[in-house]
Length: 123
Image 1 (cartoon, helix red, strand yellow):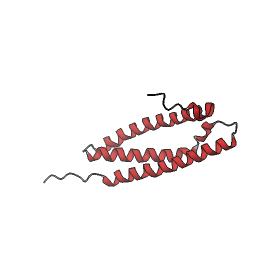
Image 2 (cartoon, rainbow, N blue to C red):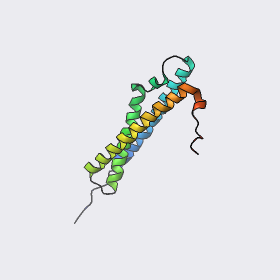
Image 3 (cartoon, rainbow, N blue to C red):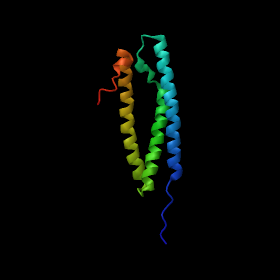
Image 4 (cartoon, rainbow, N blue to C red):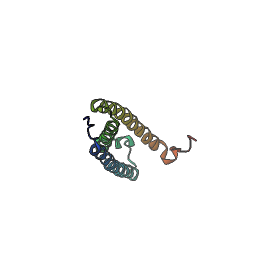
């Protein structure tokens, strides 16, 4: 009798939980750092907000996404090694893009204030 291995539902939920909890911490630290910078109106760059203190929860988000994607692929029958490889590449690529975009947004915010972020420009 041929039996399929159980899908890694536990890893799916662990990845989702890690991503959500680290995302909450990331949001809180980013808000706190931006408020501290705006109150001080210091000459230092707002891009320094992207420090290790902010990178730690961001890497937790990426790790949670990696687990979630890999477990999701394994549920559909993809071998574990291939699922983790594809998930790692996707997570590193998208995580790098998001981290870079965060720097761009913080730079625009520093240069022109909140008015510089024209969110309706992409309509």
